Length: 325
Image 1 (spheres, helix red, strand yellow):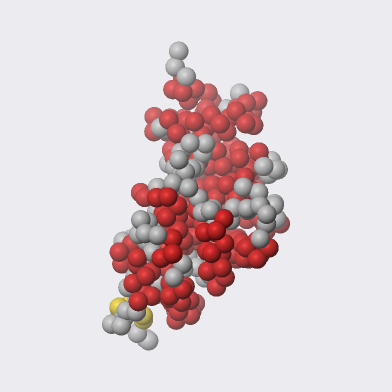
Image 2 (image 1 turned 90 degrees about the vertical axis):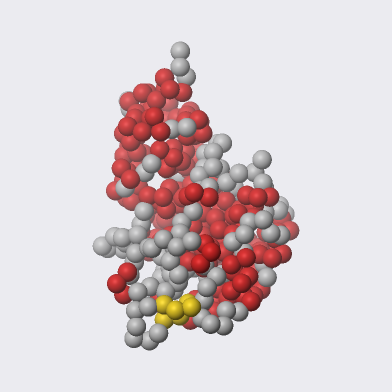
């Protein structure tokens, strides 16, 4: 069965973990903040009245907005997800709101692709990926997107297999994959390095990103300088928000970091510091780990921490729960 697995056997971003974001207009009083909104509201076209801090719905909702709404439904066929009116609607919204565009509709579209593969119980096949990549040539992430839009988009596309290489390599597909991934990483690096820190950088987004990056390198893309830079930019946020991760987030982070090392990530002092910051969080949450979380933790332990972990009590105290005598 195909799953958007976080570790060796578990799902991380299931329906209960998807981000909910506001419509793609931001009032001055809520700049940089997120309000909860349901997916059903996503298809509504919104505009701002010049000089007023409010949004209103367009009276002339076009068919493209209807298709955008439909694209969230994971049960429909793939062809409905690559209708060109959808992309035209996304580009139109991005252009209309300019610097105030937060990327939410783009991330919701990416999430609809992930939902399609979840229902199909498999990642995109070669033919689907090729069609989608052609469709995504005008799908452009920017630094003005909100954090949740960026993390949801990268996580969803990675889960769906958008970036997975197929053999023989199609250079056209590879070029679009590289460009799309580069724009996402550039915006993420920019957000992570902002001073003062961006207020909407949250623990779930951090965990989703590291999971996605671990899956990316596990599927074959090379360790580019931009990828390394994104890793370096994320690690301080792992440390800063170490107490904000829930049991699932901790298990998936430790799995992802072990997987990254397994695929060539150097254990820099910053990387080791991030791991060391997470380990003390294991024991206080030991009763919250389910079997999938425990399997992910033990896989990470087995892969490259056996020697080091003898000096840490976090997983040692978890061991009786995993293997009772």
